Length: 432
Image 1 (tube, helix red, strand yellow):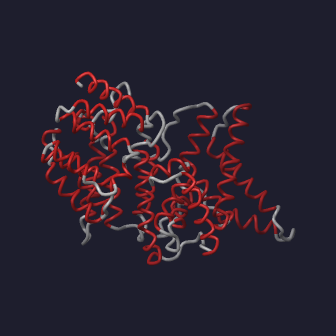
Image 2: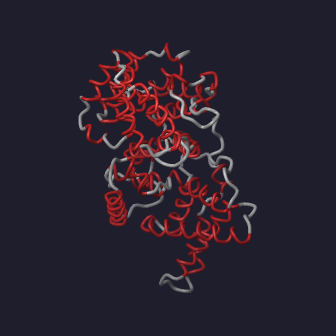
Image 3: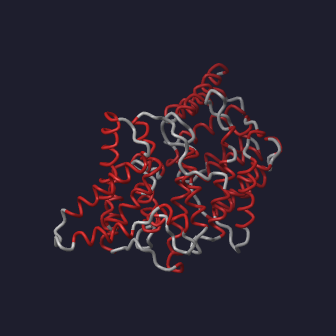
């Protein structure tokens, strides 16, 4: 695997930078370990304890310096906080030590995880993901909960991913946690055949996790490769289990790897966004590309094509074209047509409109944009207006292009995209 380390090099060695780093990279594992200790019915308590551990890290490290192993420090503080909570529960003093000892013995060590060769999922983060995706929880609610407790997404990030308001997401999370308590879902997983119904939700959460890394919804960085690494690590781990070793999982991993292969050329040396036709393809990661194609071949062993098959197929067509002009846009358009049949959505229609423009010209692309069903859901998405601006530019409708770019710039929340759109707007205004 070309992404062997799920934890990337530290971007910042300040206490606040390290705490943010661990919040992003360790949330799933920390919550998983805490849920193993406290029980699935105490998800909110696990989140509170993890937050408290991170706050203590920030306070302690700011005064006393950063410890040699920050990850172990945070985990130990979180475990001690959880045990303190257990000690304050109404339990018999005589039974308390035995319960704590039992809990400690059931916590797997990293060495035990690494040496495990059974078909049991030993990774706490992946186990927690399967808990979040229990079939008693609605599909969207599964993914929302997984993004919150496993991936450390903020409510705002989840709201943007689902085109929803933050209060609506908060209400959904509260209802889901209540549902988990009522359903008495166990942290210990059932046999493989009973895990299969949860797989759709698990794959959807991993896909959204990767997408947030591929194109951050806010902040100064367009790419968050740490999230992509973690989603690839978890998907690879999923493939090691019989319940997860499916053509769909291979297809999703293929999509992640083929997309990641293009990361080295997505930004220029100054951090500015580069479009696909502007990228230096010699910088694409050949090893990731080959691994992605291998997983796509493994995905073809099934009898049906999932949305991940089609999206991985589109990524493969981009990656295998020797240059932008050689891209097989008719096949890409055919893939989007199938994807729309399989999983209709305004976002897929937006991507299809781009393919239509490449095959049939910019006016056909604009027509495809205008015909998108429920396009009002895209009005707050800057990409919708950026695509319109690009197509108007190709038709020399510079005034309309400027208007679209202006709207896109007002909506964009990521630094490199804002800079890119500002340049396009300036150019369109010059010609208008």
